[in-house]
Structures are given as structure tokens and as C-alpha cells.
Image (cartoon, rainbow, N blue to C red):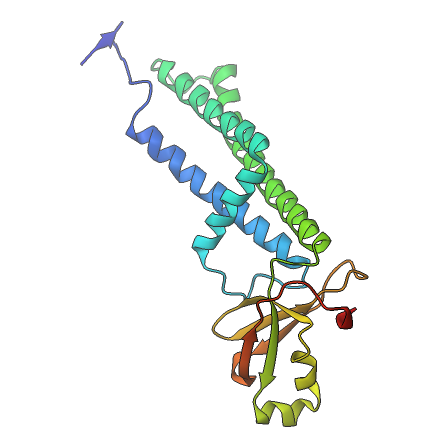
Length: 223
């Protein structure tokens, strides 16, 4: 074991550092993806509770955010790595001391810097997710939500009896499929006159047939 003036020389970087960085990056990426999903679906008057978005999708969203905000992401990641390495280097250079005495000013600053830097990173990554979500929604709205297919939905007889003429509403080819899960269909009507689109939640057990149309542009009759 190498020694330097009686003190152990620690490696500059090791498996513990990789594990520590990974354990911090994972929640940062999760926060980014969660922020993107929350702020994007908020434009459709939806919260994340009940949407049943798989957690792995949140990590996929985070990579969308990084791709969209690549420069800010690079600065944030560099800030994270440099801060971590400075904190680690400072503690590696610390010599044994009688801690009954007051710690040095630099060590106090290091202890203060680490949690503050982590908090700043979480706020920054959340902001990046929000910014990308709003930019994506604006692009979708400008293109009449052309990435979402139009759908025709026919309800089962029992549901039609309960809702009257609502079946004609879902089968007029003007609604777009936002997403679906095992419990519900989420469809919305694209209306350029409104800043936000109202989303209709249709229980799967009320649906008889769903036809996804190979059409993405709204017909004139939907204006």
C-alpha cells in the first residue's frame, strides 16, 4: 500500500465513485422524465395519476429532453461531475484532525456545497423537462397534432343507452387518440381556437369497437 507522509494515497477515481454518480444520475433522469410527462399532459388537462405510464417511459422521456436541451444538459452534467470531483478531492486531501476543534472554513464550504449543488441540479433538470414539454406541445399544436392518429369509437349498447347520442360524437372522425391503457381511452378534439385541448376519458368497458384511422389531418368538417 502506497503511503505519502504517513497518509494513504487514494485512487483518483474508482468503483465507489461510479456507483455514487450513477445513484445520483438515476433520480435526476427520473425527475427530468417525470417533469416532461407532467407538464406535457397538463396541456391536455390530465394529471399523471391514473395514466399508468410505465416508469421506463419516464427515462425515455428524459433522453428526449437531453436531446432537445443538449447544451444545457451538457453544462448541467459537467457541473455535476466537476462538483462531485472537487468534493471528493477535498475529502481525500484531508488529513486526520481532532474534530473536537472547529472545522476549517474550506471543509465547511465543501459540506455546504454538495447538497446545494444537488438541489440546483434537480431544479435545473425539472426546468429542462418543463421547457421541452412546452416546446413539444407547441410543435404539435402548430401541426394540428399530426403525430396523433384520428380514431372512430363505437360504444357498446349499454353505454349508448346511458349516454344518449354520445356515440355519434366519438364516431365522427374528428377525435384523436392521445393514449390508451388497460382501463381507459384518452381522446381529444384538436381545436386551434383554444390554447388547451379538453381530453375525454372513455372507460374501456364502455367501448365496443375502436378504429384507428390512417389519417392525421383534420377534415374541414371538424373545424
